[in-house]
Length: 324
Image (cartoon, rainbow, N blue to C red; front, side, top):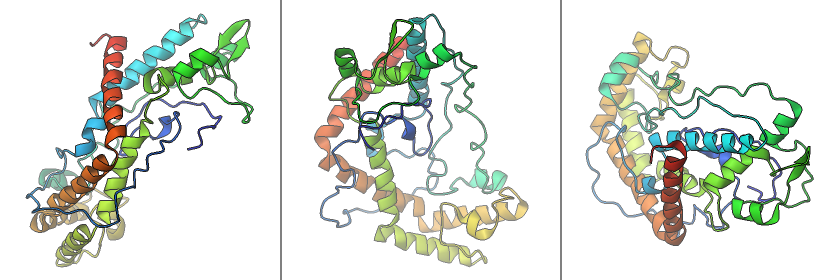
């Protein structure tokens, strides 16, 4: 991400597998999440027998907001937007901030026998709307829109604050509307900076999340995981299912438009049986955990600061929403 980016449309805080992806406004960290050593695969022990991925835990969980924390941060950001808009005589309300569905139930593909028998490859949480129904902003008048979003077209050559501390100290990028000073990016961006980048040493909130993604991708290409994927694929072939993708085999199998059809359910049931036989979830989780541990070791100082800032952020969010 270019720290000098002038695009300040801040979307609401939404959680997906790549949670928080659109909110990184603090500039990319100089810490490379892929700096995992000399390129050798991390050592692992014997994988525990695991089938259902829904309740898996990972070392990087301490640094990444998930589930109820995401919902709380969403409500806190909405509160900060409203507080800012009140300075200009307006109010802001949003329906965002509900609970989010489990984002690990399909981390390595369908892995719950009961779910496979009922839904096949259809993800029952995918269209539930839990945590993702966000009321659209009402139509805003010209000045109200400026207070909310700031200027649409900004001079990319002019610096703007990348944290709230700098914004308050310099006022860079601020504009004047009817004699009222409006921060760069408007109330949306101010709310983001106050919550996620209050000080100069704020760690990019996307850094830990990028590490999670990195560990997932690297583990997926690890020789131990490739081996168990091949074993799973051979197991699937025993019933005539030709696929080498345990995460989304419905694509190869032609069930994209009918993921809960009787045929898809039969395939998903066999899929889970093969995952259990090969211990795919247990092996992949063990290997991904090893990559995360190595990332934590290589980036310990930065992550320690990120963890402290996460704790501070959650306390502030609780205060803002009256839940602390």
